[in-house]
Amino acid sequence: MQRITITLEDEFLDEIDRVAEQRGYTSRSEAIRDLVRAGLLSEEPVAGDTPCVAALTYVYDHETRELARRLTDEQHEHHDLTVATMHVHLDHHQCLEVSVLKGRRDEVAALANRITSQRGVTFGRLHTISASDDAV
Ligand code: NI
Image (tube, rainbow, N blue to C red; front, side, top):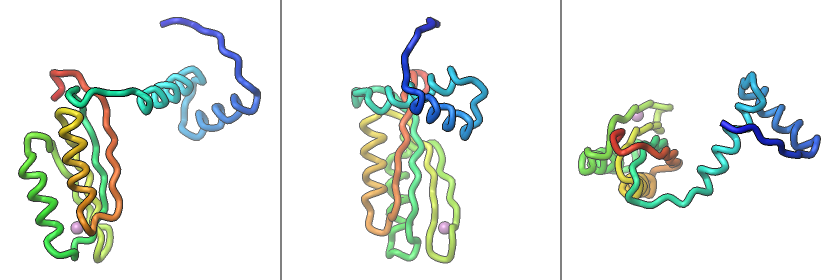
C-alpha cells in the first residue's frame, strides 16, 4: 500500500464526505478507495473469455404468455452458468428474480441479454464482478 497526496476542490471533498457518511464509511480513505475502484471497474476493458460472477436482476409480468416458461427454459439450457435464482412475487402481476451467474464473461452477458430482451421483462440489470479462474 502506498500513501499519495492529491489536491481536490473543497466542494468535491464535501461531496465525497457526504457520500461516505451516507454509505456509512468510517474512513475517508476507504470511501475514496471504493469510489476509485468502482470508477476503474466501469472503465476496464475486459476480455470476453475472462471468468466472472454476476447478479442479474429483472422484473417481469408473469401473465405474459409463456414468458415464465421461456425464462426457465433459458436458465435450464445454460445451467452451467446459473448458480441460483431467487423469485419474489412483487404484486398480483409482477415478479422479481435475482439470478447469480458465473462463467465466461461473454457467455454470462449473452445469457443476461437473452433473458432481459424477452417481451414482458420490464427491467433488467447485470452486475458483473471479475473472478479468479478457480471461482468459476
Ligand atoms: Ni412470481
